[in-house]
Length: 362
Image 1 (tube, rainbow, N blue to C red):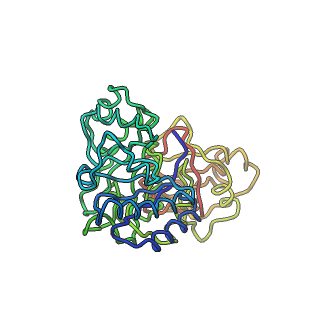
Image 2 (spheres, rainbow, N blue to C red):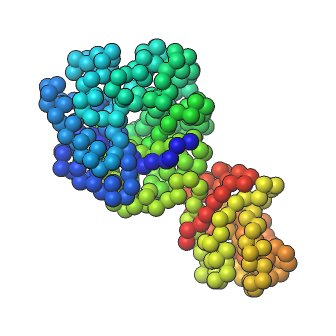
Image 3 (cartoon, one colour):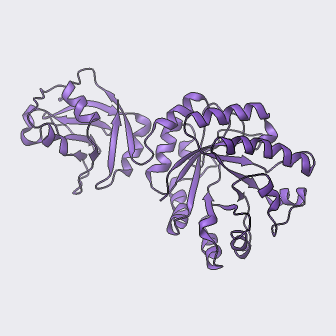
């Protein structure tokens, strides 16, 4: 697993240079370091195309971005480029090219030894023996990346279980990987249908930071890229603020939450006990750290629901100030409900395994 990055998408043939430049500068402000740039459609001559793309790629390079161009065989034909010589892309100053369509394995393996040091990014959204085939031709895996597709049409993006099967093929070889989230305000993509551009259908209408948490939670994806342009500054800031390496739940506190409960929730590095149960996720260290701090009962007579966050009260003996997240509804007056996880994030509870680390933000 390499360092996780955030990325933006740029569509030069559907936009103007100044707008793209401003977007990249805004992304740089929030720590974005990758650019997905679509080259599936081009207008104009080879020289005009080269000048147009080189200009915006150079802006990205100056800001510390890594740009990978999404290309198809049709574009190679249109621009008179041979797969045996990638000099054209080197002259654009990009970091690599993404092959929207695959070849025979031997071709991709040979491309990974191109003399320009260009990254060859492969399409991850197929559960076939494609990558094994390429690797069997002794590919230079240091120069192979993987990137899932995005899906502009509502209802057509990947189901999560299929996404996992595809992604695990790349994780097996420790290939650097990426997938897409959808801005809820961006209306630009490569085609004239744009219902958001996520990799996962379940993510399409979720807040953008929840989508990123979902992609990273399974440990199968290195980089998260916003598929559609242009995301809002609020969305960029929300992505920049999340923890890329552990799940960080948004916690809505109840009105009567007290100071020790806020401390128990927000201060420790939480981890789930290794000897798990089906009813609750237990974070037990707070009961040790705060064993001498009183905690009077409140919000303790209702039936707790999945996603509720509980802390043991003064009636719970040794378990006072233990933190729990509800997985199955139950009642227990020795526990106080201190708040609930944001409804959009309840699905992330499935990723909290034995010893998983997690945090809360209020």
